Length: 512
Image (cartoon, rainbow, N blue to C red; front, side):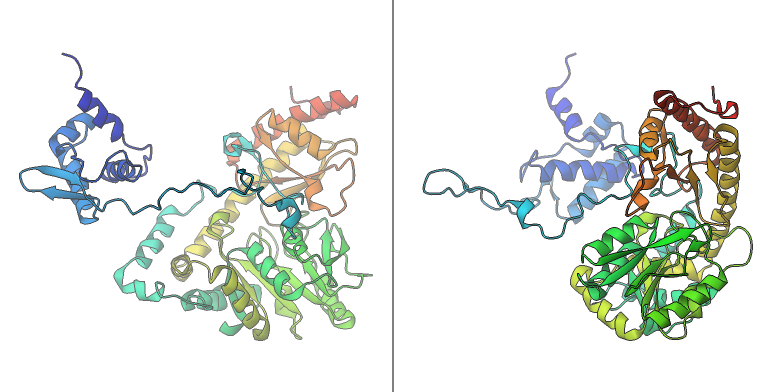
């Protein structure tokens, strides 16, 4: 018997979208809504019966009936007694009437604006951490920017999101907060996160941001102009450099050694950005003596310190070093922190701790930009903190990172014995120095052919050397089981680069 053309048409029109995370009923609703909004089904058009559609799509009749009932409740469909189900007459929103574009007197359309001449502050050509297209397909991603599916606390975070969506909790986050933040999150930051870093602050001294980068941008907008002298570690954090650069300050490079920021002979500056817990990218921890001397220098030379307490929670040995902010007695330290980085960078929740006069100014600037970060996310994360999930997750992450660091260190010794590195006391990355003939950017391109992604070091320098032998291996996005094979594959890429350069490699570095 020949196929029924009408049945074939229905089957194609209502093919379920490839979204396996959604239940079948939701996928069917999505298919029907898409057909209506894309004008494949006109107002008043009949739909197949629930029995017919269920047979065509291989679904239960109850699934189709439930989908139809919800779409009727939502105004997409309407039921007519003894006639069936039809597309509602007002299912699709009204659209503007199509109009022909205006043309000039010559009969030709006018030229579009020259945006290259109009854009006054551009970051397009600024070097930054980046990944290739489809980078998730690479088997060995030693890069930053992905959550770890093995470590993500799915059930705990789902519980907190579900609790926030309870009717009793809606009044706590659904109103417009204007310039304010969700009080529960401010309280958790103030009483749970900051005291672990030795920092004690009033609620008026804390501002929630959409991650640390948003904090950099707000501070630059409020404090920097073309005459402001801004000190940055060299090498240092490229995202901070780029966010600050929009205000075009005068850059001051500050040296970094194996112990972090070099405090002696600091050049004159108005602001100094530092990552003292685990220096980005070298992972060095600033000693207590240097911290105290840096604060004294800030008083003597009259500058303000912007402290990014980068990965302070990721400590594997020794006693946690107090934050600079905890040692600050004169209000010269602006503290930037993150509450979501170890969970997933995509959550975008950070905060600033600063004198209340500055926080008041930053609130108004933030309001003009984004109003405030998602109140729902703030409330859910406040629950995540209050229920102890943050601490238990941090313990799991630290244990996993210790294992990954040990595996990476051993693999580097086995396959790249002429490459230098120092195992960090915390954090989630290793800063590697290759032999002087290696340029890490060239190596990173060769490594991609072997499925390996690394972070070439030139992006961390304001004035990178060439060749730049430094690169960073980030361990937060790669499974422990993949690390030895990934370093071995990187070793093969080094062999290829050595062959192209005519360089001899030590026998211990052979990876064949």
